[in-house]
Length: 245
Picture (cartoon, rainbow, N blue to C red):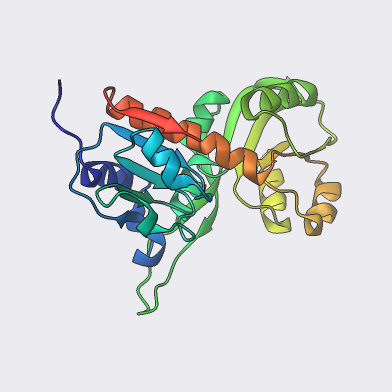
């Protein structure tokens, strides 16, 4: 039996995992409802629903993690159940962004950053730049092989735009889609662009570059991210029981 795990321990671990030093306090996430209760069972969900309190009780949860907690009725929960939340850091680290866990699944090697965001808080403090995408080299695969892999990993995809290249050995995974990012990816040798949502305003850039695009779907990438988060936590604390929804 290891040392007890507390909400603050998980919050500190995720602060490092999500490099929240790159975000203003208003975006960094962390403890949404504090608790001193030791955590043996934690529930992970994207957002609250009407009977989330019933789920917490029936699953005997000690803590919750939520991606979008804002509609949560805190008074409905047992008073000693703590809540963690991460919105933007989760999106950027565990969906279609600079996501090392996804890179490993897709066999992307020699990762390079693509695109940046930089936050400035209300006091004018500037935070470190953070990448919103990655480029990696992979063993060459056709569009069809990539579509099969994406469908298997994510449970489907939203849209696929075949390009001019028949086989892809350099791939971008990006948490945004705009003409500048598409043109830059193409200039850096990318022939396949993976993202969450297809943006119509980018069609001209897609046509001109001949790049292939797979839009996985925003919700699918978030659901994948929750499963990835469960694995990240389990790898850190093998004794932690994790229930996802």
